[in-house]
Image 1: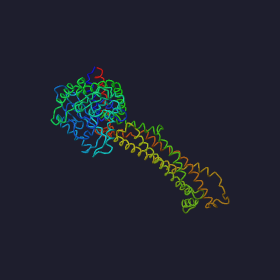
Image 2 (image 1 turned 120 degrees about the vertical axis):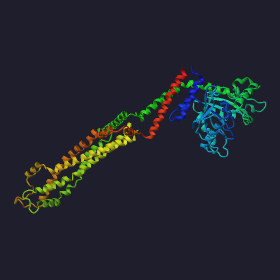
Image 3 (image 1 turned 90 degrees about the vertical axis):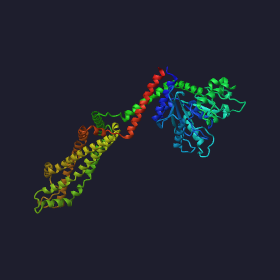
Image 4 (image 1 turned 60 degrees about the vertical axis):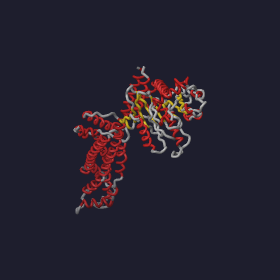
Length: 610
């Protein structure tokens, strides 16, 4: 079985590591909160500071009138081997060992002033101090501002409530042991510390009562009713303390001598002599340390459960944001290619229907292209006046003999040229959809989120590829339109020629050659042919666009990029895998917390059960 010192010392080390990593929880209970500590609570001038100094055996706390403790002081005592020198270390100055405890007092004062200024205001930002000494027991104590009833000059009106709320935030936690300090020369019924302890710990299971200033009681009176539990009963024994007098402090009487005088007081006291074996600051420190060990042992299963739960959560978060990348070029190249493939999978899911967006391409062909074709100005181009004008111009100085073939061709060419606009618009519309799907796919590829540079590279490579595909698609659809102009469907006009001329005048072959009906007939024939061409292009343009753009995007969006990446040097590959600094910092913090929790679990297992 582990010794009390080793178990509590381990808890101290874990709490300090939690503090260094800023692991004070968030959602749920943090490891720091799960590990028991002792909060020192009392009214102003109740003797809190003197009790702490007696437990530590050193004079190191600021003194003065009014509110002196204006920030929580998390004090961790670490027992060292005999013969080792004592020193103190602040968390905000971790490499600075202080062996002069007067310097410790000044540092506490200066660090308090740094946050609160030289006012009498308070702050809930704690100061963390570790003391290493062979003369202490392993213990974590939290010195809190003294409870007060009225605000004095220089303090806000809410100071009374602010202090009470701050103290509450510590003592209401179920793993906090409350050290309630009350002066013996005041009625215990008016004790601020006992009143607060009763509110958060009505059963008294977590509360230790400490009675100070026994030597300052009026002659003929004593505190036996309190110390023996008759005035106010707690589950744990009351402990009486005799602090150094102001005269002793002025004379710089050291704490060792003060402890000796305290022992003599209880041993020689006619009232308290029978209780002397369980009175004094040394007994209090051992009592707290022993109780702390008991509490830790009771809490071990729940602490281990919390640690395991947190380890699982941290591993899950690391998996979500990504594990660290290997440094060799082969692993980096493999990682880049895998990330590109992950993006490519998401992109294809958008096109094939696993994710939304690909349906917009179908919308271009089913709605946008037909609507654009309907809006083409064929009615204007094939109006009576325009047909007459084009046919007449095509004849030149000699009128056509049978059918105005050149006029027909010019009318058809002019009409077909209008199809180029909707054809190019379809290409551009699909290009815009594909670009948007690239953007969405990059954003939705979880694995890519940690690499902003690679995201930009993939976006640039994909955009460059889509522009190539768009150019090829534009050339193809324009060729389709040009093909319709370059070779007309002869059968269509042969069928027309076989149809009898409606409303024609049989008296002569050329009698209505320049009549309105003749030109309307030409316009109607051309319009019928153009409608046939329109139906053809309505089907062939989407085929060309899908073949040249969508199919190529699915098949070879990053093909050129893969070849380029394969030729890059190690430094270039590393630069492509640079991450968002905030994400890197987050991963480092998670990794450190994970290491802390795993180490804590192993150490608690080995120390608690060996």
